[in-house]
Length: 253
Image (cartoon, rainbow, N blue to C red; front, side, top):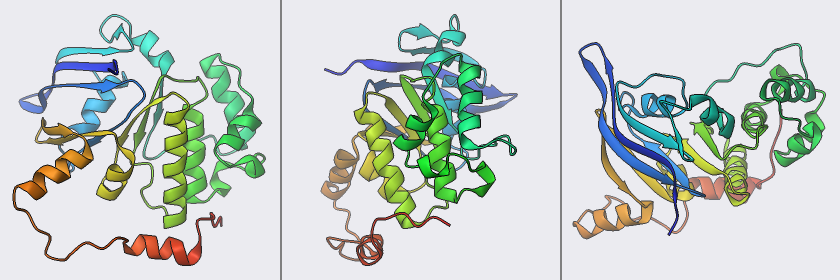
């Protein structure tokens, strides 16, 4: 039985009279890819920012790898990596210099070139972040979350705006990170992405978790209820056609 690496109990977040998160509880198991999904304004970003120690909660308890958020936030910061939807890097530094900078901030020495190789960016080692394509910037952003060898990483809509090759490549990278032993929590508005990547999904709406299960069980339950698609699904989709015709190789600008 997998053990929870994150445990959230009765989490509440109020902004004045508005309750953004309404007493939610859930666990994230060690070694899984966990998706937190929901429409804009559902409360998912607020929830993750609280777990990431970036925002204060109103009520409830959170433990990350056994550390109590109220008592040991500094310890939690040391074992997590956070990749935001938009990341800003010092424009005058190249990728090797940026990794060395972050390494110093974490007080954790890393082999910068080996880290770039892990995300397929070793040939861009002397490039500045502004010179990277969208997919390259996202891969580098994820690389920076791995500098401190985190137990958990948080990815906020990591494939938004990427072309199909870059998107599939990033899926492979996320799976590799999980296989290496890091728990991954991801938000995305792409349901096919969540279905492909996530072991379990929590769907939020209006500050509450309205469903938590595996993607497969959610789909099976909907089908068993009598739901039918207006159009019969085929064994492949248009993105599969695109990848098949153009190849999986990354096309960097």
